[in-house]
Length: 327
Image (cartoon, rainbow, N blue to C red; front, side, top):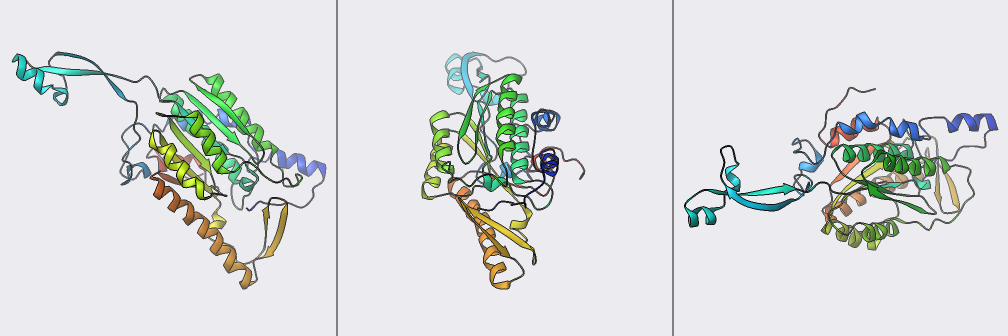
């Protein structure tokens, strides 16, 4: 697991860091992403360039249709709903009419573990994940769905039940912001006990069927049980995986130092040494490839979101929405 470890700072410098938008988010910032999120509705037909238009899933299931009645054909009715048996039996055209489900609960799962507290270019991964959680929540809210969430760090999970209200979104964003601002490079080392498998198990207990579940994480620490639980989760729900990564995972610098942490162990490496650079670069690339393979086997669409680029721009592009110019 990797995290940015800064040297000890004076109090004034630490206060300045707490207000750095690349390092921490706040509730106001997440609420202000409403206009960006409402531009994307991933229940509508998607462009061919969208990741959800792939061979595994052309689009999300959307809201279901419940049969309401069989009635006489009226001019303008969709001929696809013509009922052949009733038409042949009576000699008059009959069509089936349906009512659409009012909503589908959306569960936003946001990772704020220490492994996410790293950034080499624009944002920390934890910040990008928080912004993604807000964008997804706003998209679902404006699609007419109830929205809830599960926010987790190395020590605990916070569950926010799904409800269609701005107050519930505010509760979700407050939990995201709270856990985001608890991340600290000099925090005392504690062995983490919240791994991804436990989070997925909590999702299985909360979302039995007909949910849209958006997993936002770097997916570190996946184990043998992860694939099984992913498949269980996707069996009766729509699942989207947003993998947040830092650009350094694709292009490791040839020089400088990097600190790797695992629980209470911290080791600093000199990237200028070839014997060190190659294994670390291979490890980082392998972790991205491992997550891609996991999602492929689970038949879950995977969206790659870089912490080195504006979050909303990538979100809109990956889901087929309008794309703004680069900032």
